[in-house]
Image 1 (cartoon, rainbow, N blue to C red):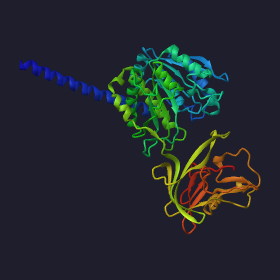
Image 2 (image 1 turned 90 degrees about the horizontal axis):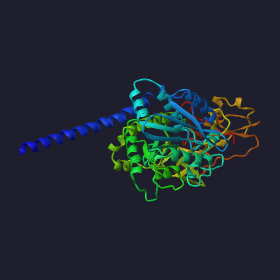
Image 3 (image 1 turned 180 degrees about the vertical axis):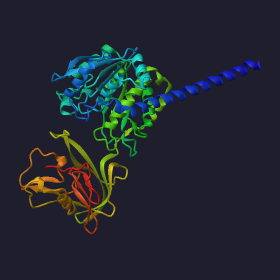
Image 4 (image 1 turned 90 degrees about the vertical axis):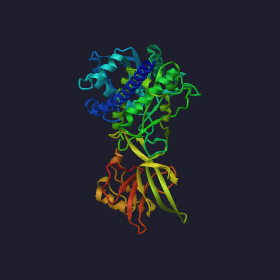
Length: 497
């Protein structure tokens, strides 16, 4: 009787070893695909999309060209409020139907860039052919690369009716929302990818690391019930997180699970499609989100590969809940432990500054307008950029009294001298027209304007940090830092006040 028992034990051991080997192979596959596609992204990057603020007219020629390739079925499936065409790209022949849609918020364009990189990837032939083949043979993809072209036109969240499309899943008052609902219902995809951008100020939990990518399998009820549909999305996210951790360790978070009854992700999950939300956040020195675009590209491909072979079934549901939550502990700039004298009282302060974008007819399509968002003890917060103000005094920026005739008089050397003397704003005899703020070395006002730069919540960030002897060490102009012991920073500009 012993021999059969021994054989059973040996067979069980072999089976367990095989399962462990399979897990190792599966782990290396998701990581390998994410790493290889990330590393080779430059080969597929759509060169015509160089920054975030592209428009509908920029992607139409790309979609028309895509039509010429028999691999793709490209067609207009609807129109926006302002009658811009909305396209659907179909590719692949597999049994698993997957729908991806991006830019339902017009100013959230990172994933749209990644999708056009993905279209280029599918048309190439190289060492990643096995990945392409697996995706195209196992899945049929339905991709809407810009759901809100009217919002994209002016780079704003809402559509031309001022409606947030992601809060219109029930009333369906917008043509774009009705289109998304009809596509979901007619295609009935097993999986859906809801592609967004989130604030660059989110962190991974309470750490200093930005939430560069955040995932979510949206809850379809307030109880946050997990059924088989949501379960599939959760397990897939665990795999996607595994692939990204080698690329951005500690910079992946989970978006809030709070149920939003009006949102498309929550409702599409309820309607039977496993929805994966991808939110593109912030990354150091990546203002145009080109690195995050690359991460989207790699993450989407690795996810599609994982779904194609149902590899998500190998991941544990509980690991989804181990992904840290999005929190908000970041500022663009934090000035730490600087002394500020006000009303005869010296106070030790930290200052938190946010650089908001204001759309404008400038070459880059916007300029920054910074303001103070926090004053006090900021020891639990972090900045993309930080200045150590220990031993320094904060002094509000001064306004130079004598007007300059024109901007050309404010040379780089003259601007540096003014900053050293504590000036952050100068007067001009004639206000410049069509000036690009990024070209301004200081803030500009007219000869008769009155401006003060006292420190205050919600006010502009214009001050200098001086030694007790009165020597200026740092100048902060419009929330940008100039270390006067170093060269002028590349990212630095004033405002026309």
